[in-house]
Amino acid sequence: DIGIICYSPMYKGLFTGAISRERIAGLPDTDHRKKDPHFQEPELSANLQLVDGLKKIAAARGVSVAQLTIAWTLRHPQVTAAIVGGRRPRQVDETAAAGDILLDESEIEQINELIAARDAAVSGG
View (cartoon, one colour):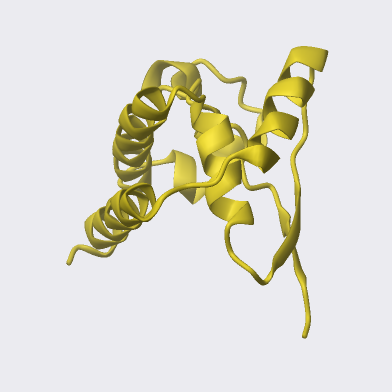
């Protein structure tokens, strides 16, 4: 009977769909993502491949990768809220709308398969 509040479900912008290898390379050395293992190889490639898969699912659903990610996070019954930041009003509107998205079993299975493939790539398995 304990709820979970997810902090940073967009994982420092990774799950917005706007992060690329070029964008990471162009970040200033003072950006905390430069030292984050999730934004360095071999994890960077695995994470970008995960996001590419999420883009396909999101496009088929007619939502953004950010909305898909938030909907996936909120579908877990133990999650009572997700802390999602936004820099612009448009981003706040977009992410707030994600709370109304209910993923079907096929979408959940596809996302879980992408996550498993990412985990296997990172662990070398």
